[in-house]
Image (tube, rainbow, N blue to C red):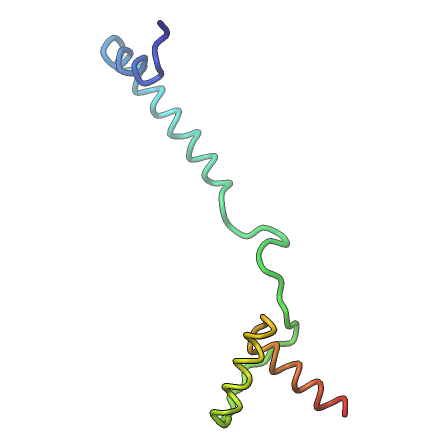
Length: 94
C-alpha cells in the first residue's frame, strides 16, 4: 500500500534528517512566495462608489423627519443617504 505524504516525511526524518529539513524549508519558502501574491489592492476590486463627489455635513432634524427618512429608506431598500439625496433632487426639480 502506498504511503501518505505524512508517513513518507516521518520515515524520511528518521532515515535522513538533513534531507527532511531541506524539504521542509523549501516547502516553507514556496508557501511564502505564494502568500505574497494574496490580498492587497487589485484594480476595480471592491464595492463601487455610489457618490463621486461626496461631502460630509451635519444637520439637526426633527425626530419625525428622521423616522420618515428611515422608514422610506427601509421600504425602498436603499440607504438613508440615497433616500435623502432623492428627496433633495425632487425639491430641486420643482
